Length: 476
Ligand code: NAD
Image (cartoon, protein in one colour):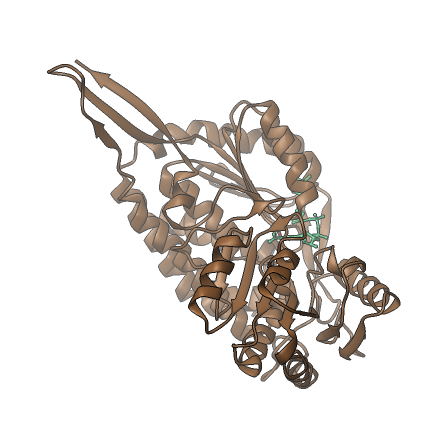
């Protein structure tokens, strides 16, 4: 398997680096330089905007059935190319190869779901007040989209954005993460090979601030979609608002977990640890603040810590590895700061808490118990393999703890009691509530945060609607 040349995709052309400066892409498991991603110039961005503008009317007018066929073909190519795509994810991000294979399958499903749903973007007929009048509400694609995706789900996030935009009939300029460019470019290649017309999909890399500013300020762009941190999301939303452009924002979380004493604490700990350590905890829905009812607290902590200590950490390409490195040195530094600060504030270490003696950016699966609300980790999304456990007495206290932060993306509840489950699902302020399991998102389900965790939805029928606007037509 070879790491490919990195380039830009503009107006249907693969644009080689040429004399453009490049940014190093680094393997987080070995710190080896994999390649250099070209930095797009302002002229490149203008060209991408022009391509998205010129290609939009043709794609909008392409029958939904035909758009769907192309997207399904792209999904099939991605599935066929799974060994390469999964290998690229593991090299660029670090996660275990089997997890990368699963990500490729889910990314392909994003295109399949969007392809199916593209054929069902129905409008409505509204009864007229007088005879002979036909009143119609007709959904139309919103126009060219500017998209920005992070590094932590390097196939799923760009796929979700591209699939939604293209299925709805929009053209798109996407800037995936500069830290995971090859997997994004391979998805772009699958779409091009499947027959997406030139200019409908454009992919650029470079200086995120400069690119987003230029794209969002352009009158060509009608919608912004971003996945990343709350602070950047807020800044992009302000730029979008000044041009009266809609924005879909998938931002940070700090997911609470409520384990009630009628749940089986060992089974809950097993399910939660698996979810926690997926992608080294670098997932916005990662279960983090684990509040456990007093009667089962000790059993829960013991099981969680035992399993965390036994987790097999190493290079994601090695057989049997359950967790890879962190994706970048920023996450490693964050783990060091958050754990040291929590210990200073009285938390107890139940597992991990240290860097691993391996060449890459490895951090041990970490469980902190008796964590209060005043340490940094309890208030800042760790985005790493760090679980915080704290006891609670009753449902009111648990729900108050769950809702104490401004974030509201995902939450998890473990209980066998139907009334407790219903109460929690009604009172928790988050876009996703998972009861007795940890699968927070699927291509067919609406995903998105409340409060500081974002605006709008991705996935599901709702996700496709974000890329559409309704026109009212009244005909006599
Ligand atoms: P970051 O906020 O610097 O970057 C996050 C992503 O946004 C990166 O891909 C980056 O290229 C992009 N970005 C940064 N500035 C941008 C701009 N002005 N315009 C457009 N895109 C821009 O943070 P980071 O160090 O990469 O990650 C740290 C934090 O970000 C994590 O703690 C986590 O909370 C959050 N994050 C969340 C998600 C998510 O899925 N919700 C994804 C990635 C990062």
